[in-house]
Amino acid sequence: MPNTLECLLRLALAAVCGGAVGLEREIRLKEAGVRTHLIVCFASCMMMIVSKYGFADVMNSPAVSIDPGRIAAGLVTAIGFLGAGTIFARSREITGLTTAAGLWATVGIGMTTGAGMYVLSIFSTGFIVVVQAILHRDHVMIGHVAAAIIVQLSDDPDAPERLRQALEDQGLSPSGFRYDRWEGVLSVELRFERLPCPAGDLGRLLTPLMAQPYIKSLRWQA
View (tube, rainbow, N blue to C red):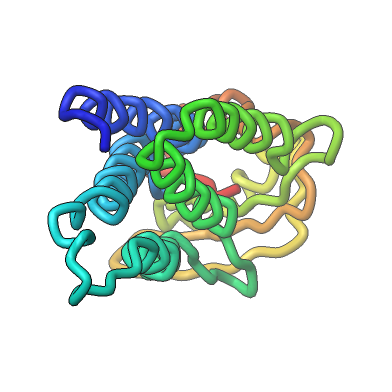
């Protein structure tokens, strides 16, 4: 059984690994970021240490039969509720699957760290971060991502037409749209099947729109 210092080092390594995975998610403005992944990985490591070493005082008794893998197996199942909380269905599209899968993998990183498999946990962390960063949906190898832009306009008669013209000037042609009017504010949801730029550059592309006086707010989902 490792001493207390080694257990603390395992917990610290798990926190670093989980934070690294979460940082990539937070940079992309996903629902689960550094804190969530760090806590998940740290807790998984702690529970793995308890599962593997926490019952050492009773394991030598012939009257006691304990499966040290039960807690570890329960972790894989328990993370399901947290992963489900990051998955959203909107307008016939599902988002958050990659984040949910990353949380599930983060549990595995915490478990391997708690078990003392340091090389495996560090390699797994690097692999997951690289895969999430390189194979993101708006990467040049895969193609640009579809998106929805939600714009709130002042309820002026010519505001929608001015918005349409402004979008054309930015090279944006929506494939569909939906209007909703409430308390003097016109909300327009514009759907784009393919952006002319990666999702990360959409804010820069839309900057001129944000300066228009008839636009009250603008946000997007990619």
